[in-house]
Image (cartoon, rainbow, N blue to C red; front, side, top):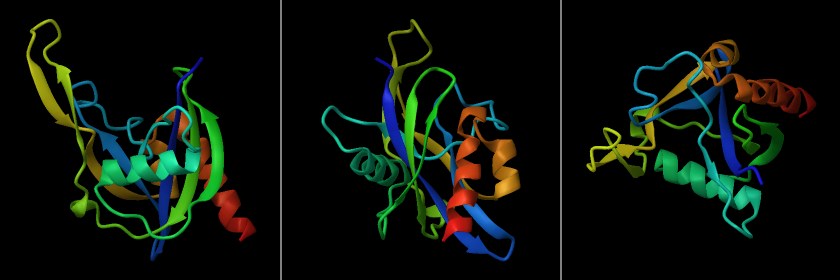
Length: 154
């Protein structure tokens, strides 16, 4: 069964219009990637866990901030690796410089027997919708369209 994850697309209304907060994953596999690497903060849904609860937990852990308000359902997408992502949207302004991600450990370099610690999120950045489309993982780009549709309807 494919993995399921959940996350929250934070957005704000600024002088440049709607902007979304995207994150760049940490660790050596993402170190030299920029365009096409940015994504929403998200993580795995635990067995028996509600998708919204998982999205809130993972977003707060990865950003190191508390969320205010109730996220709205946004879309369910399937990433290129087969993972399903349940996404929600929440309007909240966050200072990207205040992001303080949790850490993960992995053997690096591979086969060395040395465990190293890396931040799950290396950076966070507010981007206009057009800039976000260029920066995001291709499989997550439909979330921008879904957000535009959600905001047109409200």
